[in-house]
Image: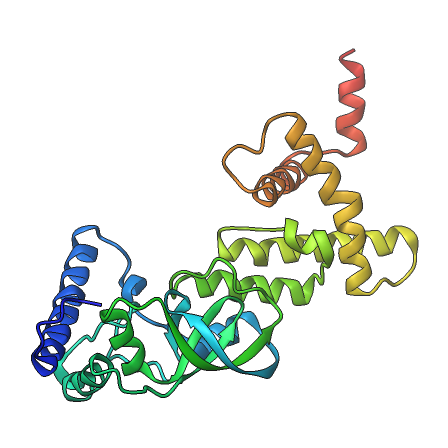
Length: 279
């Protein structure tokens, strides 16, 4: 907790001013570093859940939650930044009242949060979270409701990361991979998920033509991974051609080059006859 002068009301006022100053300095630093605008914006709960695809939810009851895991808000409040520092003087009166109560040792009710993966989103208690941060606390009591999603929340740092998660969710609906395959297929560019989805569907169509039988999406996804993706990636590893890309990005490069060769080179009988005649 910051220094106690023995005058709780004055200390609470200084707590707020210090938190506001830190928020302004953070904005200035982000501008100087030319960071994206969403770096210091709270993650909006509804956008996160929409990108990940909600399956269900369950109440977990009263839990102790780490403050650094609280990254967003349900009602998309603009009164606090990503680290729950006040963004204006609008919240000053209520904020200082809570800080004063905390410094006097008065009981503070638990907050209410939604849990998505290892991230938490405040439903009620934004000011209490902000004060706890300012006073140097590490945990806070919360009534937790866990939200189960189709796509894991791992890797979400900023609002822009939701685009990748949204495209990945759509890809997995088209190509329902499971187990290790689901974990292995990872792309950085969200649009690449759409490209890969088209590629897998085309591969599955050719497979069904060859076998003369209908295969559902799950079966196509399973066979594509085992018969096409995994062998190509293994060859890329052996040839040391993955580089600083993900393995899926390296695979997509091979698939694109293969398609380009098909589209830009003639492989009809006339060409084959000409090649034979040059021997």
